[in-house]
Length: 301
Image: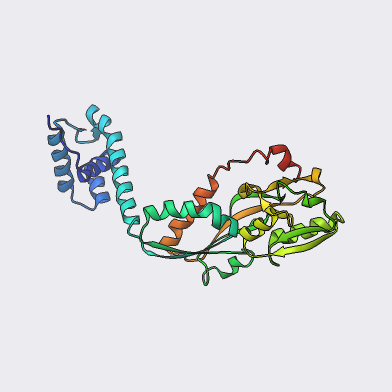
């Protein structure tokens, strides 16, 4: 049995007449003549073998069959527009320059870029990782998008998630007992470096800068070897390190807001990537290691 097909153009005319209860007003909306709209409705009725409207001199009302079709017609037209729109988006081209913190650029952003490029193969992304405190100033010139870290509640950019800063060290060596305390940090301009130094000074804990690097991998490797303690985010806590808390004599650290910054006059490619990253990071669920029990993390708040 061959079922009749539903032409979107005929359905569009049907929905217009149903919503306006008038062939004349529907014709104006569709930018067609009244006779053309009437012919489309007649073709749809003939194809389905039912009358869709009850016509009188004063009114154009939906028949029982028309009422049953209206919801389906709207859904079909919506799906048609969505499909056409998605296919059009796949043709978007361009280069998007992204700046992001080292740990997010290593662990969190790459899977999101992979899923994005699978849907938009003509968009090219250039990503730079490093200290993000100065990156937003380069929006529009050096970067199109920046995922940056700010003090909690700063209100800068589009808020994505909150990260607690915590101390971390080797799981096999109690380096936190050394005096002065050796610390492995990032260069000046890093928020975690500033917070670590301020917290240690406020606690009057003697310390020495044992290692400095732009690379989070290098800093974490030094800490893992028992050469120093360092500061990391709970959301990207390295499995090779051990969480330190007040029970280990470490002072509390603040929380940070991870925020998205967009350049003005962002390209269509940039807007698509921004929305994808925003959705992916907002909806990200961390698999919190057992070492990061809620009571342990809460001790830093």
